[in-house]
Image 1 (cartoon, one colour):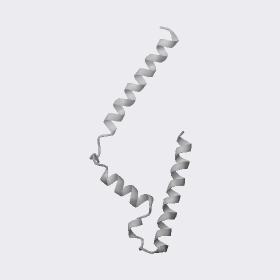
Image 2 (tube, rainbow, N blue to C red; image 1 turned 180 degrees about the vertical axis):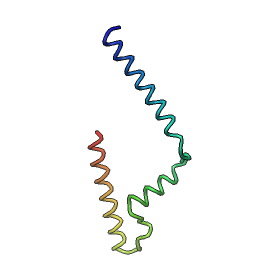
Image 3 (cartoon, rainbow, N blue to C red; image 1 turned 30 degrees about the horizontal axis):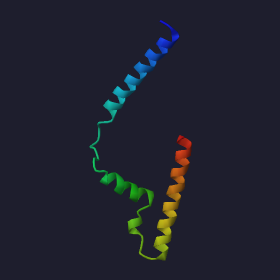
Image 4 (tube, rainbow, N blue to C red; image 1 turned 90 degrees about the vertical axis):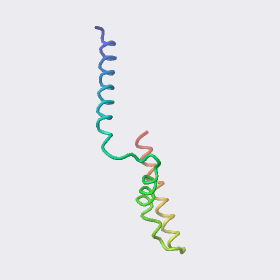
Length: 82
């Protein structure tokens, strides 16, 4: 068997193994098909519970600051991934 065919065979087997492991590992929790809990958790975690901020200029400034920090964090993460 040539080196190219061995490489393709090993790559294919590795891919199949990863798919099987991913399928077996990913079914432990209930699905969030509508995305409502994911969105609510993200809002609370990223913005630091912005819903609890008072309706005032200070509260608005705190929310804007948290959102700005989250945007910078997302940008850094995206740069590192790409």
